[in-house]
Length: 338
Image 1 (cartoon, one colour):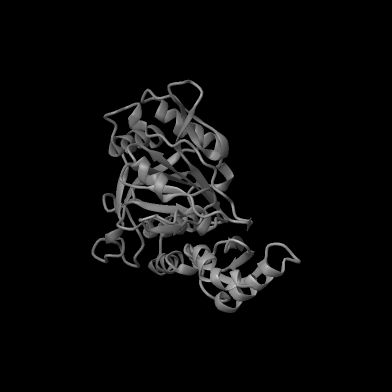
Image 2 (cartoon, helix red, strand yellow; image 1 turned 90 degrees about the vertical axis):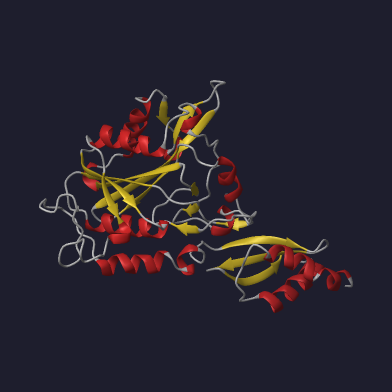
C-alpha cells in the first residue's frame, strides 16, 4: 500500500462532479505519494467506461445513470454506500497491495474481508461457502497516475440495487459485461456501523488522520479559494500542495461526462433479436442509433420481409428499451398476412 499524503471527504450534490473531480486529479496530481478520497452519492447507477448502457441498466431503473472514466462493472450508489478512491502515481501503484490494505482495515473492525476476483472485496456468509461482495472496484490509468476506486456497502438498499441493475438481453456485443455477485452490507455483521464511522476508520488506518473536507459546491467560490481558482485546503492555506484543479478543465469534464453522447451513445456496437412470433430479425445499434435490421437466418423469406419493414420505419432512430417490444408488436399483423 502506498503512503497516503492526505485524505479528503469530498462533498457534492452530483456524482457528475465527483467523476469530473477524480479525472482532474488523475491529470494534475504531482506528488510522490497517494491521495485518498471518500464520497457518498444519492441513489445513482454508475456504469463502466467500456460497458453497454442497455445491457447494464434495468429498464425499470428509477435513478440517474452516469458513465465513469474507469473500467469495471456497473454499480449502484446510495447514502448507505461509502465510495473510496486512491490517486496513485503509476510508479508505486499495486492493485493487490491497495485492495489488501482496504480489506485489512475493514478486518480491524472485526469482519474478515479479503480481495477476490476482478478486484472485488468479499466476506464469508453464515454457511461458510457463499461469498458476499461488499466492494467492487475499477481503475483508470492516466499518463502519470492511476485512479483506483471502489464501493463499500454499509447499509445500502439492496433491493433498489438489484432493481436498478441488469438490462436487456443482447445478441452481439463487445462490451465489458458486469459479473453478477451476491451483494451484502457490512451492517449485516456490524449493525451499528455508519458510513461516517467507516470513513473515519479507513482514513485513520490508511492515512493516519481524519479526512479534510472539500465542498465542491464552494469549489470555485473566489472568496474561499486562492487567486487563479486553484484549490487549497481551506483549513491550511499555508501548506504547499502538489496539485491544482483548473475551473476550465473541471467544467469541460462535466460537459463531456454529463452528455448523452458519453453516458448512452458511447456504448459499444451491439445487436438485439426481435420477433413478431413467426419472423425474427437482428437489430444492430451503434452510437445509440439503429443502423441496420437484417433477418436472423439467411434465406428465411418471412424474416427478410419483416427486417425490410423494420428497416424502412426504424433505421436511424434512437434506440431505447421499448424498441424490441414495439418492433415485435407493431408489425405483427402485416407479417402474419404474408
